[in-house]
Length: 137
Image (cartoon, rainbow, N blue to C red; front, top):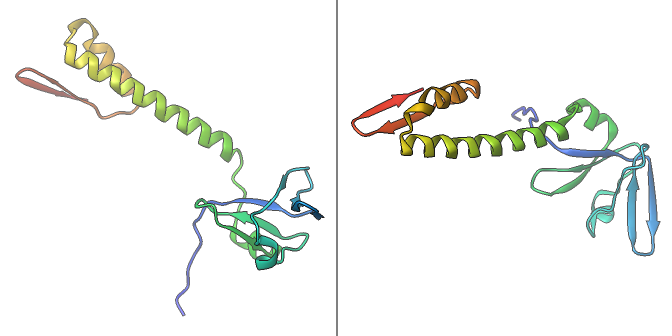
C-alpha cells in the first residue's frame, strides 16, 4: 500500500467527559469547552473519554483515539486569532486596492508617490494604467 502524510487543519476537542442528556449527548473538555455533535455521531463513532472529537473544514465530524490523534496532529497556537487577523488584513488590502485603483483612474499626480509607497509597504505588486503609459510596482 501507498503511504500518506496528513496535512489537514482540523478543529478538535480532547474528550474529558461524556454526558448523555434527554435532548442529546454532549462531549466536554477539561477546560469546560463542550460540543453537541450531530445526530448519529455517538452510534457511528463510539467516542471514549481521553480521545478526540474532530471536525474537518467541510464540517465532517469524526472521533480519533488519543494515540492516533496526538501522533498525527500538532496544536496550532493562536490559530483562531491568526485566522481572524488574516481575514482582517485581506479585507483591508482589498479596500486599499480599490482606493489605489480609484486614485490611478482619477490620475491625481500629487498622490502618485503615496500609492506606490502604500503598495510597497504591503508587499503588493500593483499595476497602474494611465493614458499612454503603464506604471508597475
